[in-house]
Length: 221
Ligand code: E4P
Image 1 (cartoon, helix red, strand yellow):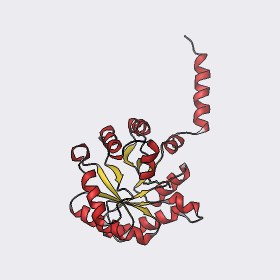
Image 2 (spheres, rainbow, N blue to C red):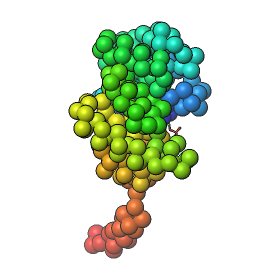
Image 3 (tube, rainbow, N blue to C red):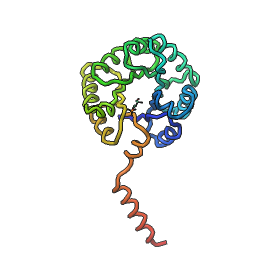
Image 4 (spheres, protein in one colour):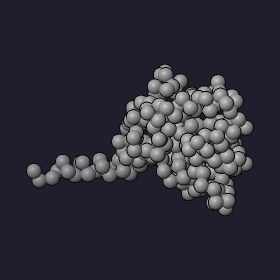
């Protein structure tokens, strides 16, 4: 399973990129607003900051409701950074979003259909040609449903139906989510920087480092 980072914060993106673990970036309107920056400018900064990834998702704005409006916004987004090949248009899971997905796919633009909460939604998006689908597991867990189970079912369906759409497990809240979606067959997990940090940690690693440092202090100099 690959890692994307789920943020519009440039520092966090750069830190994760330097670690060498990053295959992509996902953003959404809430994440961009949180940064207090102009949407297109931040997408350009992100594209420049992570040249060696496969995808940077930029979502059409909530103002775009019809397929035509989504396509018009997408046509501007794909020009950013000189028509960067990594730009991926994130579209909502609506009938208009599916229509826009089909249109953009035919034009060779990468797409990520977001706000997926059922297997049927994922199947529709895959059939519309989506490069990626984003099931939101944390938000399902929040309403006492099983988000990991949804990812597992979508993965099974895509295998059985031989669909090459990649699953981005999204709305990931903690390391256990990451392990479980990896085992469930997600191709990608998009996670906040705080979760990347948590993944790298274990108390015994810290204790081990502490012991090595204390022993080393007694070494023959
Ligand atoms: C995915 O692409 C979304 O940006 C994100 O994972 C949503 O997560 P949240 O439920 O924590 O807002």
